[in-house]
Image 1 (cartoon, rainbow, N blue to C red):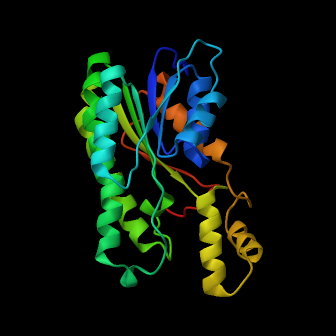
Image 2: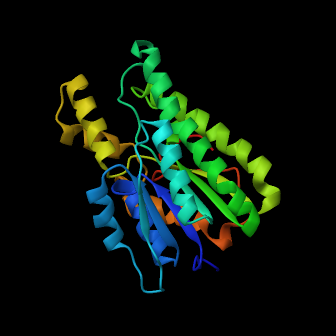
Length: 262
């Protein structure tokens, strides 16, 4: 099975922690040149130093704040002047705060749409030309199982993640003839800072300890545990490989079997 990404350049967003960082590490191990994208330069430098270079990979980073669309556009445009060829795009952005959808302000929807859909659109428009030129491209969006089964208490996130899934499916239809795939990886409950925030939110709303909430959540996961970030990253990395060339337009749950839909 061909998992070799030597000579390929990957742009990985939200890559200084959690699933994004685990994905960057995995892609580097497969031989890719990895460019990290995040807003904290100190963490970016630390993460670059953790990436494998045994195959002669050259890793870089880009400072960009996904809360500012123009900042993202400018940062990527500047990067592409230095590195014009990108073969892999990993879209990964933190979700909004939780709460019932009926209580959400319209500004929350707008801000989250801008952070996710608009930034992903800017990034795709910037890198797809080089993917077409190479006859090889991989776009993977790390979103949520909520696109198949909405999560109670995450109304805004459910809405916008669904929009990203539809955007990605449309991309797969348009870009397939050029050797470019577009897929979504849907993490379930994964041991990250985001999960810690969800546990805290539920703890406050339900008047239980975070530990008790965690045990209740694990009880409804068939594998009876939370996923590791590295397990999600492995799925992302496979979809980026040459071996996954005919997998496009899918939304793949990595959730220990929790999602009840097919």
